[in-house]
Length: 188
Image (cartoon, rainbow, N blue to C red; front, side, top):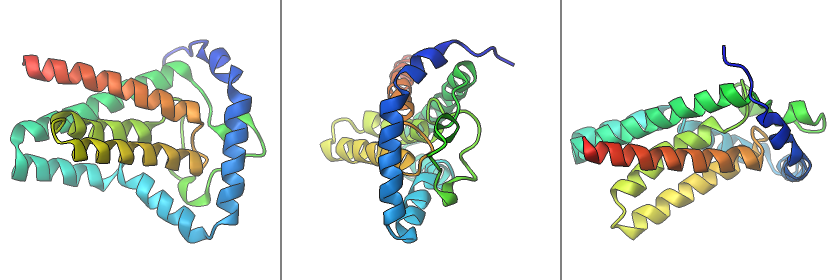
């Protein structure tokens, strides 16, 4: 088991602003119909489940084997690094930091473990970021990938699973990992 790094002190220094933002989103979520929260949960969970496998298999079998390998490898390395950082930072979920906050009921089952950085957002960058890097000459693919990543990050905040800091660091960390994976993949 890894020893928790004193990153908590840095992280908790910004908690007031992050938690007020999450509280405002919680009030918005509570004022909307339950179907909206359910739809956001389904969108959020797709990236951590079947969508990744379907996309990678389609890319591998129907588009380009190298693209399939690159996407799968990027996704896996991003998640591995994310889990390593989570276990080093040991930052608790937002509802542990402020008793006013509640996670959306449909998302509660998957919101386990540590919060920082967001695993779902890292997954989104691992998948859609890999596609954006591979198809970087096609502007519409890059824009669509960035929109999906941003929507996914917002969904994790909207559901109350992560603070803005969690998703921002996940995007930056996964982007850095994606850059390294791209360089290594091209070298090999």
